[in-house]
Image 1 (cartoon, rainbow, N blue to C red):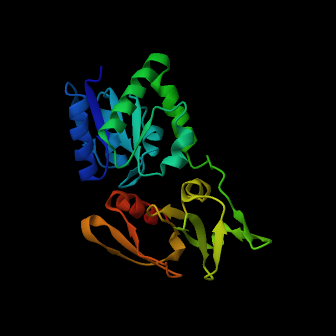
Image 2: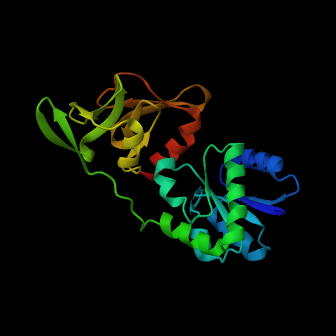
Image 3: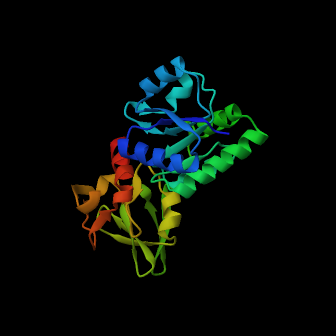
Length: 256
């Protein structure tokens, strides 16, 4: 039974929200600390008894939380929280402790805790942590498309992904807009393209658009923390990043 948990999260609002949901799911448990950085987390773990579980955000104020297990031996199982795209992380679910995709829901946390309970029954947390860190490390590079084959009339052409400024849906067809302004139809929907385009270079802004960071000409905030993006070449409609995705969008931009 979980009696103590630790939250490692650099966003105050996200930490408070996670703590509130954990109080509902684990009323008997105590939050021993909320830590915002790699440095403070390492120091705390060196000086205190480790809790029953740690909720650890991947992106912290001073770097990646993957650095923490490299600097201090962690005795607790870890549940990662992340703004990474859920499709890119799908392969990491196997043999991992678990992750929660931001913004987390009560059901997400409950499922992660249930998985942790099963994991503790069937394998050691240390083994699972090592496997997850290895899979998520920079050396693990998923294969992303470098080019697409498109059909224009009776002709087949290749389009390099680096030529794509953004992709949007038009009459249930995915249209790639190239940096030179050309339009190319793609034989995949946006959900599929999201898994095929490198997440370092492309971001799913909303249901209709996937954008390259090189195509972003201007940005400004909108109501409720939403962000409006101006693209170049110009998009056929306004591109708005929702408030739920705005934090992930900012993290993505910072990574580029």
